[in-house]
Structures are given as C-alpha cells and as structure tokens.
Amino acid sequence: MAWILSSLGCTSSTGSGTGGPRRDLLSWVGASGEELQQGLGAPNSVEELPASEKVMAYRWSRTKVTGGYAVSIGGFSQLGTQYVPERMVKMNCFCQFTLDANDRVRDIVLQGNDCLADHR
Image 1 (spheres, rainbow, N blue to C red):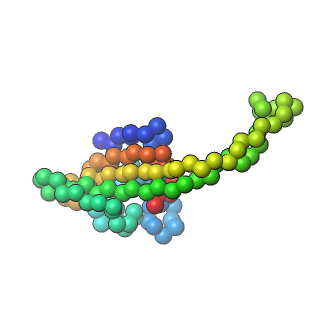
Image 2 (tube, rainbow, N blue to C red; image 1 turned 90 degrees about the horizontal axis):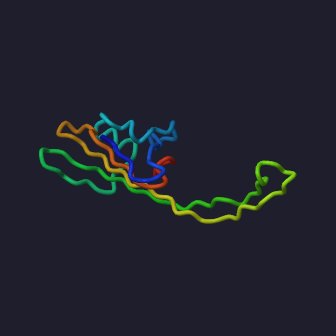
C-alpha cells in the first residue's frame, strides 16, 4: 500500500528517461526492478530485506524561482494590482520502492514537495 507523507504528495515522473510522456510514480507497482531502473535510472541506494526483498530509494532536489508577476486584487483590475515578488523555493522528493522476492514493485513510499514534477 502506497502512502504519502507530504502535503503535496509525490505522483509523477518521466517514464522512460528518453523525453517520453511522464509516468505516475505510483504506476510502477508491479514493474520489475529492471524496468524501474530503465525508467528512473540507478537508485541512490539499495537495501536488502529478509525473504529476498529489497528497497530501492531515489532522491532528487532542485531550486525553483516563483513569483515575479502582478495579479488583479480580487480578480478585478478596477481594484488595482498587486506584485508577487520572486522567491527561491527548494523542491525535493524521496521515493522508496519495495520489491518482492520476484523482483516486482509491491510497495511505494513517497515524501516531498516535488514529486509531481519531472524526476531528477
């Protein structure tokens, strides 16, 4: 069962690493470890678990500039406009994929504020 630990959740990434359509991170359930690595690249870490299971972990972060535009107050230009200043925001995502003894993703844990964007 996948669970989300952040307020925004973590749900998308690029599916093939080749500029193809973005793939929802939760859609990796049932995929093989090889397919996961082809789609997301090499994991940041791999932990062996009892019963021949393992956890593959991925982590990425970036900074993003937001703001730098004007908005109408209350949605009406007659009330004036307000400038939204630019600011730097740190974006990150941490994803853990648990693979069963058959090397298939059975569980996904997602945490961060940048899992809705492209991975890495």
